[in-house]
Length: 254
Length: 254
DNA sequence: ACAAAAGTGTTACCGTTACACCCATGC
DNA sequence: GCATGGGTGTAACGGTAACACTTTTGT
Picture (cartoon, rainbow over the protein chains, first blue to last red):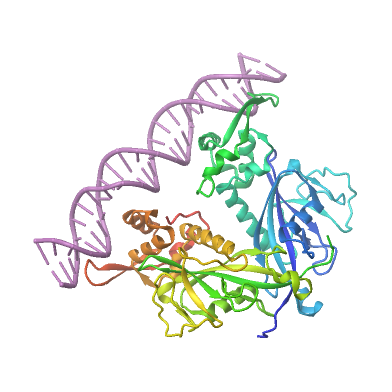
């Protein structure tokens, strides 16, 4: 093997999940490529890192280009960098390698607004909330239900699988749910979030409830929310101070 | 911010842990820098990625340059890539960024032979097993006890902390111990390994024992090993077939 | 009154913890 | 015999899972 150093362009690819807690759906954000290679394939939203830009900032930049959202959780996932992962390396650009640092993000479907208005109807019969024309031109951005994924460009399916696994782990062992929920939420909101990501049968509601309350970091605001029929629900707030001592400890939020 | 793309050199930095199960010590491999910046500081063994070389291969290459070892566990840790992490970026080389993909490895101290013979005495009164001269020239490679670390170059302390955390997690939740142990081992060997990494009080021996055996992936070879005084110990073998179904399941090896 | 949503309580069960105890060997 | 290391057993405790039940609202 040559002892010459490789020159890299570094890209950031985001696995952006959104949970629709109302209808129990888990989405991932995909964009349709308009360039070769993998033209017309769906891919994870990504970008190349610019001069003076940190990896994380690059990740936030693509995110901000695609969606407007208030609360989200973002963390680095994995770095994929074999010399064969991108076919571009073989023909163009004199020996430049493309490295992909992937990030994963979680946000609530209800809170997210797709910025690009060149959106199209979702495969799952999902109604589109933007007024955009349906077009095949550049910038097609869509929430895809995880259960109805198309074939993806590059090694993006692998990245997505890795992200999905991490998402489920994170939810079980760390309080990322509270970074996605609004300030005030009901225990049912929380439970629905867990249901859509982990599946219906991860836990009984009443057990989930008592476990979470026992931790002591959910502050009961006393106020109730009336959502039509049925007993009104208590609004809780995540008390990060009360949580602090539990940090780093192996907690299970099941 | 400029919209120009950054050009990267990609480095791999290894956090290589070794456990001395006999004397209950946990080491990390450090090398002394002989170049500016951070000349004479200790740092994690690292290298820049060459043309046609995968990240993981680069990680194995440094490892192989420093130590000879049979059984080890290696996995990617995290990618550190802020534009300010390496002072080299500010003055030399026209805007080239240095990115560090870190890997962490675990191996047994008893199995590892340091290749570089320019080694020196360990701070902890640790006897050096190589015959090398003590010198301050390039290539100084040493096992440092985790409890007696020197100041490290770059952001290597942060990388090390991250690796240490991952090591403890991995040991609790996945069977990496068996990648480090020899084919045949006693339950006490296993227990000692856990003790040195997780601390003495992580679990009672008898409980550790019954938990591990209950899983069913430890094959009792029937043969005994006589190590001086005391009852001889049974030699076990890790049965990866019996473990396969448990894979991906959330196991706790406490 | 009734259905729907929120919240409480109960019980059987299982795994963990903290020990005490037995076994095999070298000296 | 006895110290040493290996291996087994057990009883109390605490948490979990599954389920029944009560409370508060809108219609």
